[in-house]
Length: 282
Ligand SMILES: O=C(O)C(=O)Cc1ccccc1
Image (cartoon, rainbow, N blue to C red; front, side):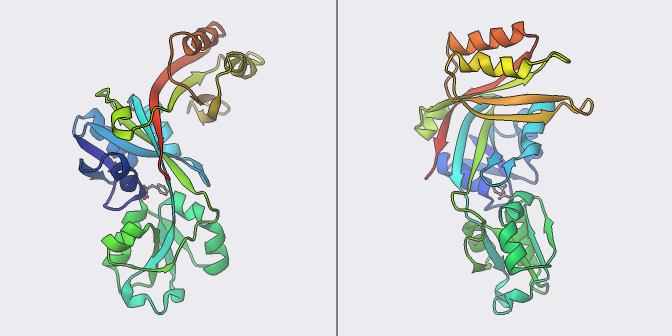
């Protein structure tokens, strides 16, 4: 089976893939949407995409592409610890404090704001397609005084020197990834996890007071635990939002279908995005 992921080699996404799909054939893509398109176009059987980070929140492009452009079932979830390091070309290791630009993925930059503000004050930073793309760029340009924020594997892969370890602003930095596939793969087999979640997309009827309250009540009185609720723009006008709701249980025959029927009776639109095992990597 072939797995599509945000490349190039040694991104955090690749780390997540390797934790649960060791030995699988890997296909790097330049962007997250391109890795999802590859599933739709049957170039790969599944894609692994980042969806949420402890420090920076939702990866909007992933949720938006999943809800507005492609309809790919979520078949699994992987959560991994994230450690960010500052790295430079070995030629510039001694004078690393003279860097004049820092490159990384926007989420990685956001995870290190305090470090950048305090230790590299005033140095501009720029976001690129992934942390590994930033590392590769630093390797390709030894003549430039630039640094990348990326993981240890990227430093190894691209021959860079880590000059500051663990520069993320808070401990317990984790990122969640969705596994997307149309093949109905049994992620429990690969992950060994039988802890399930279910994700719903819910649109509310317009101009009806108290609907969100009633939506939450439908889950509350059934004692269905929510692990996340996120609003995203419908992209149809200011103030028009839908909700992505993660439930802390597997799709069953009674409780979740009952809650969905209740939401529909309120005039909500409900789409099941997936019911899947969730694997936490320590
Ligand atoms: O750029 C990467 O390495 C990615 O896989 C995206 C990302 C960036 C920062 C934290 C987690 C995932």
